[in-house]
Amino acid sequence: MSASNISSSNTIKFVYNDGIAIPYIVRFWVFLVSNIFSFICCLFVLYHFLFDSNLRRGLHNHVIIIILFMCLIWELTTVPWSMYLYLYDVVWIQTPTFCMIWKFIDSTLYTTIVKLVGWTSVERHILIFHDQWVSTKKKRFFIHYLPLIFIVLYGVVVYGTITPMNNCNIPFYYFITFCGYYSCIYDSEVFSLYEFMTGGLLCSVLIGFGSTFLVLRVILQKRRLQQQIQWRKHRKMILQLLSVSSLFFVLYLPPIICSGVQRFGVPSDIAAQFIIYGRLFAYYIVFLFPFTCLSTIPELGTRIKNIFRCRWRQQANTVFPKQWAAQVIQLDRINKQ
Image (cartoon, rainbow, N blue to C red; front, top):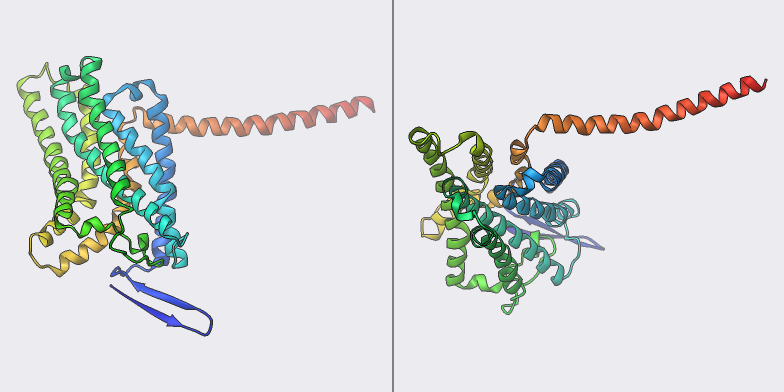
């Protein structure tokens, strides 16, 4: 990475090379299109998950609803702020406070989403094979609701605490993503390793092995105990996890593996370059997540058709009454004559 300044008689403009060959303006347009489609899809899925009582009551959908809300927050904050940087080569608000807020929102949402998906890979085993563990309100609170509350609060509290820590006086560069800011606590090898182990490695193991073992477990149980494991009942729950996990397999696990290779002392320039691109394309975990949830909505085609039918009816109700009124006025004039 390098930064140089080009001076003229009136202004000084910094040209920053972040190691990615994709120009800023290309990133802006790609992010703009992706964000618009993802935002619309996110609203569509959230609407049905919240207002369809069957979907809303499903315990396996609660974590998906939380993640979708986080995707909305991401798409309304950190994505537009990144796009502004790509378009104007400078951050939106050039103050340390804004840079810290930007870094806090990004770190909190990204790590929390990953941890929630990791927990989902474990919880699916409970909901399918040990549903008696959530058979009462008390059990549901401790087994289902409490882990979700803890994971969300953990991200808010931890990153809300460490993000403002700048006792090492890290400078702010207003022509870089997050202004180039990071908390001084990451200079500690102990905390850095803890963050990697809990946020990266553990979640990767849970997502990778949890989803894989779930499929194998369902197949084996289906053959042995046909009556106890109802495939049709749990099919959408399993497909939901597989679609979400496949997204993380492609966009999340490879950078974590490369980071682990570097952390444990194996030098690799290819891995370093892959990590740089991985940070950019990590945005597509959020962009594509709402689309992975579409398959879990029952009668999806019918619901989409109903939206267009309602739209057509609204247009018809506004057009035809005007035409009818014009004909009435014309007939009235003829009668008067």
